[in-house]
Amino acid sequence: MAVPDEVVSAASTLPSRRRIGAPEIVFFVVAASAPLTVAAGGLPTSFAVTGVVGIPLLYVVLAVLLTVFTGGYAAMSRSVANAGAFYAYVANGLGRIAGVGAAFIALISYNTMQIGLYGLFGFTTADFLKAKLSIDLPWWTVALGGVAVVAVLGFRRIDLNARVLGVLLTVEFLTVLIFDLAQLADAPSGVSATSLGWDAANTGAVGAAFCFAMASFMGFEAAALYSEECRDPRRTVGRATYVAVAVIGVFYAFTAWAMTVGTGASEIVGRAQKDGPALVFVLSEEHVGKLFADVAQLFLVTSLFAALLSFHNAVARYFFSLGREGVLPSPLSRTHVRHGSPHVGSATQTVLAVAVVVVFAFSGKDPVLTLFNWFTNLGALGVILLLALTSAAVVGYFVRDHRGENAWNRLVAPALACVGLGAVFVTSLLNFDALLGADKGSALTWVLPGLIFLAAILGVGFAVYLRGARPSVYARIGAGDGG
Image 1 (cartoon, helix red, strand yellow):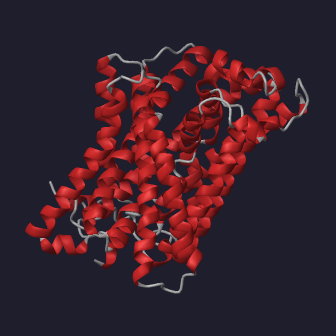
Image 2 (image 1 turned 180 degrees about the vertical axis):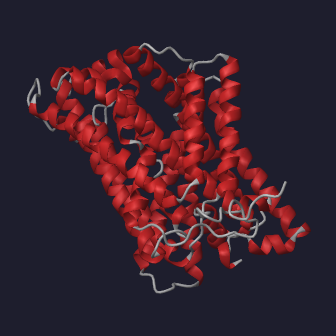
Image 3 (image 1 turned 90 degrees about the vertical axis):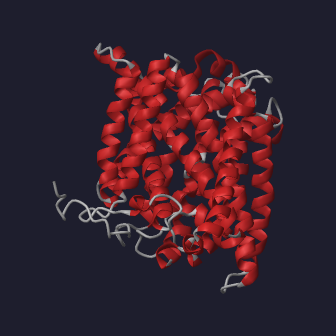
């Protein structure tokens, strides 16, 4: 049976054009970092596992490092507009072979990050339904329901997705802000800046604390993925990334500090170890009231959903970009006639998510300790490596042609960022056991990171094959819609 023209166009290989601006991109970027999820899960876990009281200061340090990174990243976005982002930047700055290696790292990183979130989403939502509505469902049925809703939205126009994320993100921020202000207004030991001091940041496992904090920023770099769909890519991508880094860094540092004020700086580690991810809701009930705590739990579910939708869109655009340039099968480059969405790439990501959720459902393993913990930490590790590679690529790209960029943006900032992010990556590898909650000798501590390096090797090998066997495809690598 023929497929109606209004549904699909195989020849349509450009994503929806000029629908979104800087505010919409910021929604996608900040939603991926999931503010309420970080407040409820990331911060208590950071305090509990690392024993570092100065977590708020570490967020400030990382925000500064990522602001430096954004200088070169924004400069690159003004010269290269491509839905493949990191892949395209590395291909243009370090060469096509390195670019395909980066593409494969990006695919495994963003897919594992997105799919891993379904473990926490399924568990958290099922637990909420059981506790509040007496509806007892397996986590995986809830997760698959989430997959279905994300699939429908991923199929639709990008501006619809932005509006959905805008509403969810506004609710998240207001919820966390009320929590923060309540801690300061009702501080048991008074408002203190102890956790913002350097001495507080030097206690405990600082390396692991940096890793946890870095994971909270994941998604900030996604602005360039929408460069072909925004109204003014030369200015919008850089502006949106700067805003996202500032918002994420300041907001999370403030929330982490408020949390230490709410418990008392000397008590934060013990309370986090005792209450775990429930700490935010326990403190909410103590300082605001039970109704607010219950509502915050509901908004945690919507926070996770917003992150799922944001990462889903990122993955779909990577599939689209690689399909358009022939690195992956060309059907992935198809876009929907009416919605302009990369709907084949979106559907591909949905199929992968369903397959993984079903496998973990049959395995009977804990969805949080395995699916969520393993996959999201693996994804975060890969993105950190991509950030370092992209910084090196910026230097390589502008060495050949300054393109009117100043020395800070084209050379100094990306060089500093490459060194700093490289150090974070090495620290993450050395502390990966802490991130997983595994023993030093556990096979997981080398098998999971090994997947990142395996992806890079496969990508490099495939690029070498393309150079010899399919030179026309090789020549298009990193070229975008101009290829």
